[in-house]
Length: 154
Ligand SMILES: [Zn+2]
Ligand SMILES: [Zn+2]
Ligand SMILES: [Zn+2]
Image (cartoon, rainbow, N blue to C red; front, side, top):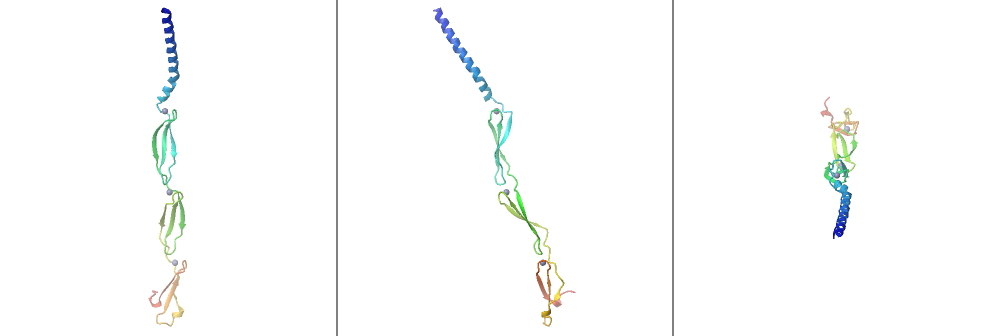
């Protein structure tokens, strides 16, 4: 009777020992699960463009768990500029077009240049007409303006 009890005890002890060993084996795993996520980093999972917001996640460097998701603000447009020189009647225009999304707008700069008139000259063909005409020409755009010669202030 006593012998068998002792044997029983031994068996129980072995099982107990085994259990302890198993527990010690699993202990590191349980500490791992209890990570305090102190060592974190942000990872961009979607880059922001001028059209769309991006996305980033806060990840624990130790356990790899994603802790937070945040939006990334849209970026500025990247404009390419085309310059249109001013003329006698139009100001300078700067045409902006975004490389990425095609958004465009035109900016007016300054004022039209105004015509660069020559002096009034009598149109000799009309010299003997009732209304003698005079004309002047713009040196820049070659526009011609006509008037009755008598209306020209001297
Ligand atoms: Zn962690
Ligand atoms: Zn854009
Ligand atoms: Zn002109």
